[in-house]
Image (cartoon, rainbow, N blue to C red; front, side, top):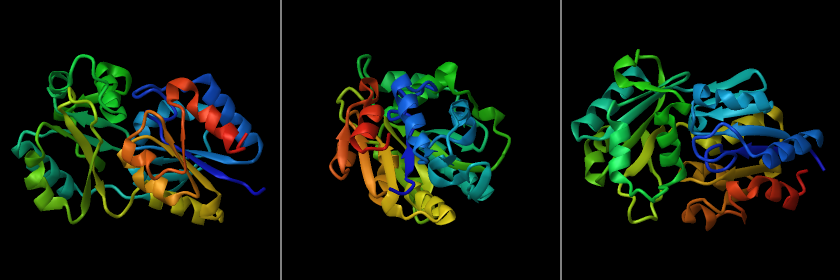
Length: 280
């Protein structure tokens, strides 16, 4: 068997949403896969700054910013931030209709000051929302270092995270930017979860095209790739890889198109899937 490339989403897949500590079972599985000369990449919507705490586990590369920033080993092979004008338009048009925003640059994330209160007021006390909203809950609690929007220094941004109550609030931003940016909206299944959350992602890239860039760089066919995810920003990854895996805690739409559904992150899903797929 030749070398395989394994791509892992973080929140809700490798870790509990918003956590930087994978289960020991997942770490053991990753090490075992690497001992068989497979390469394991993080493949996340997080920016490099927010995923940096996980780099101590010696991954073989990183797809960050949902595909806008890609490394293989220590080599940067793709870097595509938003233009300053696009970032300005996005924030202005979203704020115009009361949409809460977080701007993600390479090393920092900057959120509206009252976004935490909005999340808590729009989600029922017993609702867990989805993995992305849980990530932001924990990020705002301090574990991922969200800074106030007032401190945004204009550094190149890669995406804008959005939260609001009504789809109509997104219309001005869609009219201004949808030809260049996808509005990726996360799945909502809990009726007590009233927060619409998602992100603006450049149409020039996504996790799937980032995987193709890694394959081309390493000379490994896409048929020898495995992708693990749980949320709708993993869609293109799931559609691209040779073998796709959705977590049991993932979006139903993703489960329906994945090759297999493995147990949730809480139930050692990655380790069990690695074993099932003979990656370890």
